[in-house]
Length: 135
Ligand code: AMP
Ligand code: ZN
Picture 1 (cartoon, rainbow, N blue to C red):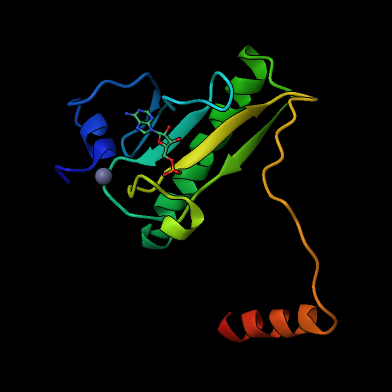
Picture 2: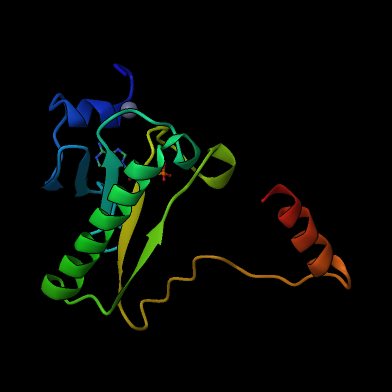
């Protein structure tokens, strides 16, 4: 897609700090990192989000994410990492070419990703039933 910045990175029309490439996947540094080494793992083909990805490709993305995470632990001395993916605008997706964030983490770095709440009485089972119905 010509107007997609990640497709343009794949095509070499925009610069990126590439760290790993396979025939179908590209990993490069996020330009605005949470911590140094924050990486984006993308399919080279344009798919908008997780639900658009063929199963095999999703598995390959997962495999590359794990390799990147290992490199982050080993050479950047991260003590942990988060894997994250924003899907659709409501979830904060800004670039509509599927991508997985691999984010280095350090003890005491103070990041809190998701504020958590609680279920009203009865709603936990009700919600589980709603989901089971679709699965
Ligand atoms: P998301 O909110 O998951 O869609 O995040 C998109 C990510 O892409 C953000 O973390 C941006 O910092 C990152 N990003 C946007 N443009 C570029 C670029 N040209 N090179 C590298 N990362 C980028
Ligand atoms: Zn694209």
